[in-house]
Length: 407
Image (cartoon, rainbow, N blue to C red; front, side, top):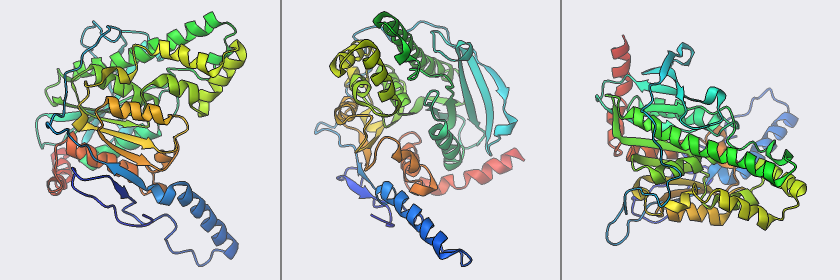
């Protein structure tokens, strides 16, 4: 609804259509000194942006419906194969203060430790920024793990880390994993001239995928040793490729309490075979170099993801504590892959934007009235923090408590 208030129904109600809580961009008064041509050009830009966002980030919000027996968590995580099991000591990270990253109410540190696999990152290290809450509200607080889009965009992780630290007012610790190097190097993979060389390079990519998933679980091992972290309330959020990794982690590790998957997928081989963007660049290069058709390419990645696809762990997810964000016209994640993730995770709460694969990220900015960010924060408040609407009034006082505590 263009320019309308967000409409909310009870959590057990049917799907709803939401619009932004703020007016659509462009409703500010024009500068009287601006020329008519400049005003017309600005209006055209605003119109294009708002049209692109389908009414400034309008979306359908479907809430989770437990089955008739009231079952919300079918079974603990279990594996039919052992590809993602690991034996590694609890990490002993090294820390360094990041004074330039000062955030009110938090102590922000860089942390790192060696990966137990081959994660493809510099020095084969696991790196993260740890936002340790200083709020005196409770001795043990939940931990939100924010995943990167490896070697691609830092924007989503930056928005959620900085945004939720301010929004929650110190009610949660936040651990923002870093990822400067790719899991799949879309530009170098199609350069291999033989099937053997290409397969070897993809195997290295799959090992990076496996290793970062285990790195995340080892971060949880470390979190369990920290006296100020409530290890019964570990949350995770991923975007695009990292949403697939996050779903892999939650599918095999029952310690994940709350999960948000933004533009993720199951049946990842179909993403590899049909996605546009940089994935298409790799696919077309490989097809030209090796003479494969699309079905051969799809079958190749079906075999490679046979042990790591989120769809393998039906029943292992906490459906009642899961949120999926989709794009209805996403040309990277095909409809069957979106539906497969939703089904595998137990038909959880989901928000469907009338958009492609990148447009929902605009709904994390003022252009999209920050609609996506606010929906994610509201979900984390409900599930990770366990707050009702009335509790927000109590949280509003935490900033003042933190300020007083620091002085």
